[in-house]
Image (cartoon, rainbow, N blue to C red; front, side):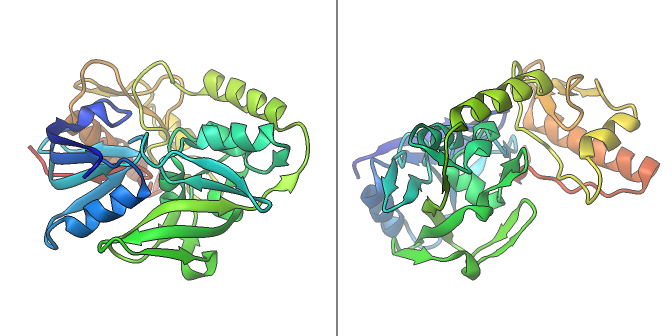
Length: 287
């Protein structure tokens, strides 16, 4: 074991909402080989969660039984290989955007607006500003519970809007992206970031968009139409700046956030008839 093992680690340190309970164990591997060896050495019945920046994640106040593997600052390499951009799962999406544009590639600029890692983007088919992760994927590499690596093609996955179905007990460790040659990528990234800063409450802890956009509509519009901007439960509040964001305004508990998510969903269903689907993942046990 060459990585860092943390016992009874508060997950509020590893999620962008800055809330949540304690994980029994957290492990940050030294590199891919260390990740594989660590997985293979764990008891077969040990629950495992793999996370990146925790930017699309809520951990309940009761915490997580088992082991959480932290890939950010572990699998953080990005390379240019044979006309493809190869990025490991722990690399921040924004870094991939800048790396690609800086080398004269176009098509990954939208990654600058995704506040997570490549692994998370692959797992949920993250997208924004007209771009979507799996539209540029050439192939991916995964690791299973026994530490075995596999290279898979997009055809092996069921990919939908903000959803990807993959084999159980298998995690993404890297991806190869096919992009187009072209200039102007850095300028487009700067324009996107200005829009993001103007439209989103980045000054407060949040997890990005809470709900998926219904077909032909926007979750933010529906939430705002129900008068829910500024709605607060405990330390959690529906953002005044963007209605599809819930922000931590005053030491919110995970319970505060989850209850507010459900209240928003119930209100929108009651007043509009639309059932909003949650985009953020919720894991762990209730307190």
